[in-house]
Image (cartoon, rainbow, N blue to C red; front, side, top):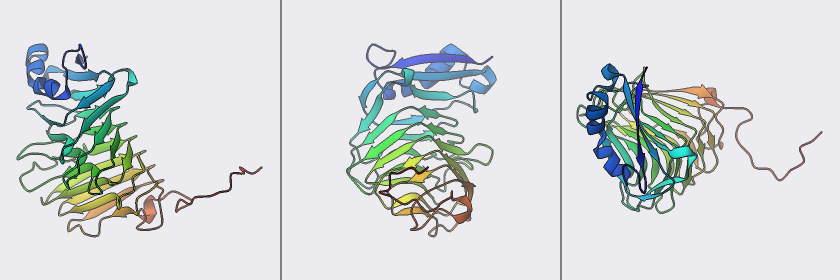
Length: 281
């Protein structure tokens, strides 16, 4: 049975910040689970975050060997109101080496005004991997710059193959809400490789140009299920990619402009506003 080591983040907790907790990941694995190979040692690390606002941006990068159940999780404690807020023009949370990392139940607020402002960015470093990461029940917002992107996968030429999501272990974005004046979900990069992603049950309520934007030389397989675009001009865009992009899925709703691929749309499509509040018989 998997041994789960739980640590807390917050006032009067094990760690005062996400940054301090992340810095201690390898030490926790070694001291409490017998080493950095969580799969062999059948262990997992869970950080439970107390309600509050955490003014910081941080990078997840560690040497642990993980899989889909033996991994590192950052989640709100008891579904509390946890906000990670940053005013820098870079990602609030960036994962550069953390396969199967789970982020759950967090509010992410960016007030960065530069073009590099992001909510969560998965960006494998040289020969590193972020395969199989899960972004679950996050609310992400920036009302400062239209250049903001809530979720971004980036795989450049030095990145590890499959590092931003493999066929067996795609990046999963589920049950999330994006708000503000920026864009929703993007895949970018210059590596000749594959990126696999799954976007499920997400609401894109921002007013920027793109809901889902794919601009990369990577081949991309993206599955989209039960997503709703409420404000973006473009629902889905992949025309600037030089790799082969294969979209699949179902029950996605949005506007008529640059619609979701026909095979992935729900019905009726497009979404239309109405002033008729009579539900009928």
